[in-house]
Length: 83
Image (cartoon, rainbow, N blue to C red; front, side, top):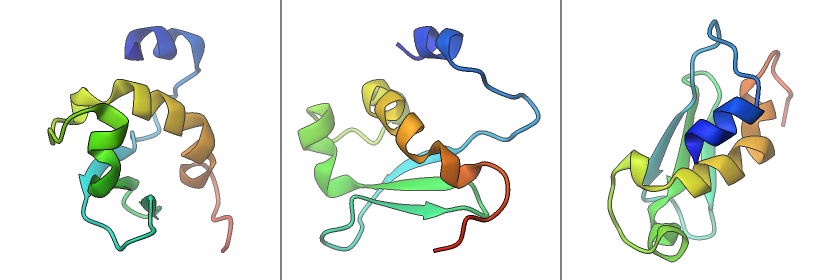
């Protein structure tokens, strides 16, 4: 799935990739963004519901990564957007 998505979306080699991690986050937080370090933390609480298991393997959730990319990619591009 990630290969097919990469063919459909333009990626820039000079821009470092965003690291996606599953972490324990406060209740109610689905994700947290660290723009400076280019890290997207997803709430581990929801992983089993979204992926079907609790594996911490980042390769185990390509569908989630593909769905999140168009929603959150603007937060990792260009200048700071503000609050």
